[in-house]
Length: 210
Length: 186
Image 1 (cartoon, rainbow over the protein chains, first blue to last red):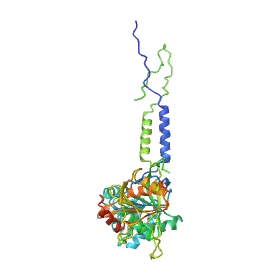
Image 2 (image 1 turned 180 degrees about the vertical axis):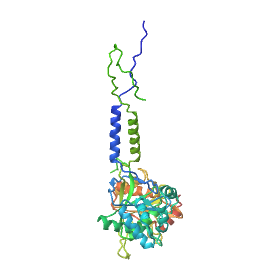
Image 3 (image 1 turned 60 degrees about the vertical axis):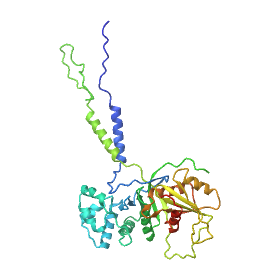
Image 4 (image 1 turned 120 degrees about the vertical axis):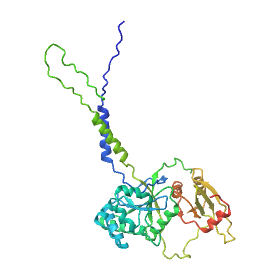
C-alpha cells in the first residue's frame, strides 16, 4: 500500500469578501460618525419610556452631577462666544481672543466666571485633570451665574440664528432631586417653563392593566 | 503572513526561457490591518443614538399668588406620592391637615417602583371616580434626599398609567412630620 499523502491545500485563503465588508463598514462609520465631545463631567442619565428625540441643534445643556454641581454647555460656538463676552462684561471679567476661542471649543464647563480665565489658559490635559475638582457654576440666589449663562446664550442664539433654544437638563441618576428642583425653580423665575429631561430609552411595559 | 507565495509552475520544461510571470496575488495584509484599525476606531468613537428627552412643563409662576383664587384640592381627589430615599415611595390618599380636626389623619403606605408597586396603586386608583390629582413630593429633609432617578421614574409612571393631573411640588413640613409620626423607615 502506498502511503496516503494528505492533500495539501494552499494555506492562503481568499480574503476579498472580508476586506470588502471591512471597507464597507469603514466607509459607513466614517460617514455617519460624529465625534463624542470630551465632556467635563460624566453623568449617567436615568432611563424612561419617553421616545421623544432631542433636535439636532440649538441645544442648551445643563448637566447636573451627583455632587450638586451644575455644568453649562451649548452646541454652537458663535453663541458661546457671544455668551462669554456678555456674561464676562456683566461680572467685569474680560477675556482674550484666545481664551474666547478656547471656550467656544469646550462642550461644557463648570467653573465660576472669576476662575474661568485661568481655566481656559490651561491645556487640555491639565483641564481634564482639574475637572473632578471643579466647583461647578454657582447657582444660589446670591451669586446666580447659571441663569446669566442661560439667558445670554438664549439671547445670542435668538439674535444670531433666529431660532428658539431647546433647554435640556442632563442629570445624573444619583443626583438629588433638590438640586434639579432648585435649577428648575431658578429658570421658572425667568419664565422658562419648559424643560427636557435627558433620559436613556427603556422599553415600554408591554401591558398596562386596563 | 496570510499569503504564502508558492512556487509558480513556470519553468521546468526544457530550456525554453519564459518571461517570469509575477503572481497576480498581492499581499493584502497591511491594507486589511489598516482597514480594521480604522473600523475599530470609528466604531468606538462614534455616537449613534440621539438622546431621548422627557418633556416637563411646569406651570407659570404667579408673581403675586392670591390665596383666594387658588383652587383647593378635594380630599376625595388627592393622592400624595412622596419619593423617599432608597427607592421607596410613601403614598396616601386624601389630605393631610393636622390643624383641622375634621380631616382624618391619612395613613401612609409604602411601596416601590416595580410594576407591582406604584403602577398597580395608580391603576387601581384610576378605575375609581373622581379622577385623581397626584402630588409628587420628592423627600428632602435632614440630609436625606430623593434621587433624580426616582423623579424621572415617577414622571415616567405618570405617562405609562396615563394620568391627566399631576404636579411636582416641594415636600411640605406637614408631610415630613406625618412620616416621622408614623415611624416610617427612611
